[in-house]
Length: 316
Length: 271
Image 1 (cartoon, rainbow over the protein chains, first blue to last red):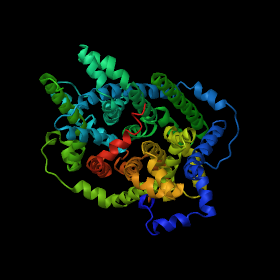
Image 2 (image 1 turned 45 degrees about the vertical axis):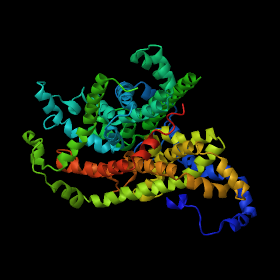
Image 3 (image 1 turned 45 degrees about the horizontal axis):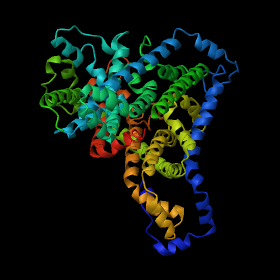
Image 4 (image 1 turned 120 degrees about the vertical axis):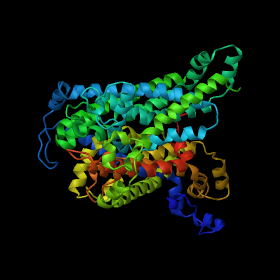
């Protein structure tokens, strides 16, 4: 790292300028735009374009088993199979949409509430900020394991707490219907702080004048929030939704850590990402998994486009 | 204007609830890592137990975690250093020449689901006999770090005035010389932010290492699964492993909190 940021000190300033005035230096300076940008772009492009093209090709074949096995071109058969698969594919789509929708809803509402609480300075602010930062930098797999113990039906703290207030034990992650909501809870716990930080940065950058004007006009605090703060903050809210939305759609770590392969024995937390991973690396069914991935990818691009479009609309 | 007293009381109690909800699970994990499995199964000993270091002995000695800590450190450092080398000049160029479309190419890496890249990578790298080695692991982690660094540094360079560079050009420096001698030294806070964030994301990354690492090159998030058996779970060992994985990164983040927050919220308020 230090090699990048330390300025050279071995040559004195004045002769250096003369020294650099060679043909090579002139050429590099003229082409600096692409000399600087191209390596990073090439790196990403090579690692993306080839794999995506390859995935697109595989989705049209019956590739399975060893990565070296022969495969046959079967056209759009995989797409027909996948799109009519009501057993694994559509439930996975539904879970992905549900998971993303629910966690985004709660993360934005809670994130907004907490950000508003933290907006004005107060004593002990430092400690609250520490608490907000920790879940967000914690390793997601470790977070999954941590909640696995807390939500264990027999020895977990969650059921003990419920017992104290007279509610019977819940199956949490072990239940066929409660597993997905429990993983949503874990995601909300870990990532609401992200929304808080983004919205807080947005709130801090707002000017006080519109607030003051509304106050002088006699607006209540709810009216000031609803008609002054919220509209001004909306672009930041969209950024938060966009960043969290992309990651929520792709959630993998906590699902794999809490329920393992295939999203549990009844596939109860199997989202598109978990499904595609299982097809690729547990069943080596590359053709079908590529088809699922291409569809997944199109969904992500679609959502991104819709949100950036909406953001631009609001910016005017 | 000072907030009213009822609001301050409400705010304090609400924030106490928030802090408790965020901190309690983490403290619970750390507490459990000091309990024997007998104590973990005994709900009467939830809060009162005699702390033991046995789990940490298991994790660090039997489970070979010292090696995995080294692996995680090496991969995160190498991926971060190489990504800074590629990403900082790229971000500079993209910021100064307003290369929006080129930036989009790099940022695509942030959007694309990792699984869709892993199959082709696995195919190519296993044919090159590279799967299980550090080079592929570092390469895959760079894929996480690079877009992050470009995104943060573009925002940083956008906010850096060009006047100093122009003055340096007048004084006879070349464009590249001005970048190296003037802009880079001024960008140390930005580079630190980008580097720290990249380190955290690489350290926490799970999916790439799950597929591309071998038994000797395993990183910590993958090694944690050693404590989850098919029949039973060594809860004490698992919590100690989880603590070993995540506590260092949380402490680092606290130490450089200002940078972490500015990196995570980079670009959020530009609208």
